[in-house]
Length: 170
Length: 143
Image 1 (cartoon, rainbow over the protein chains, first blue to last red):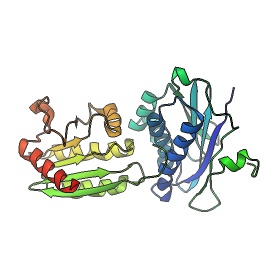
Image 2 (spheres, chains in turn cyan, brown):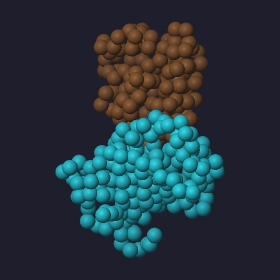
Image 3 (tube, one colour):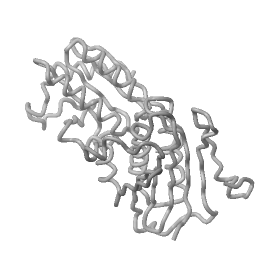
Image 4 (tube, rainbow over the protein chains, first blue to last red):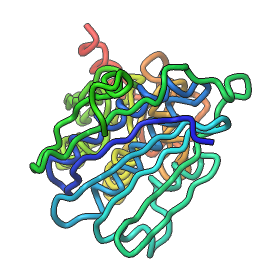
């Protein structure tokens, strides 16, 4: 059962301005989790989403490309998925997990890598405190997006409230 | 961890033969190049280097890697010494806890340092004189 969440997209570029989007993605995800998914360890969530996003920025692309983050609040866990459409997640797959992914694996209840011919995703399940399980605020799906806007630098736009009010559609 | 984005800053202060590198704010991939540049400058003279993560702010593995590299470079030198200091209840300590075997972390500075619990072998060559230097630097910066 999906309980709603958030979805982000940003440009990722190794060593370029895209690294500057990592803290903004982190803060956006943590804000949504704090609001929509009580009982998640927000410090752990901040670290997990940062590691996953940085992994895409560092390894997935030679040129700037899209980075997509989705957060879904489920009864037992918040599910954070980071996607890239580039050359994959790079050396860490061939050489085993680097420090960043080891941290993700230690903090998340479970952690998975998924790859198709075009898209590669990493997904982490962040557990929720038992007392908070199933709780979420009742104001519809929360959505926040970082829009690519076709430029090198992503423009970050918080649409969640307007989306909820039906002013904008995805 | 949510709310305002607090970009990380790095200060480098010389105390006698030692360089003290103080990190403030949130640090990740976006601030790692600045940290690497400051660590390179601190390592260059060949003296002791102390990195202080005194704030309870965010950091990730993009910061752990430069610290590991810097430590390896410092300890490869004859008489070289390197220390990372982070309060035990702070976010950096939580991250460094995942690699504690690779990068020992002093937990009690600046309230009390060097920690008496640590053995000389764990001390990475950091001596009392260097601890005093780090404490003086911190005191000056905190004023």
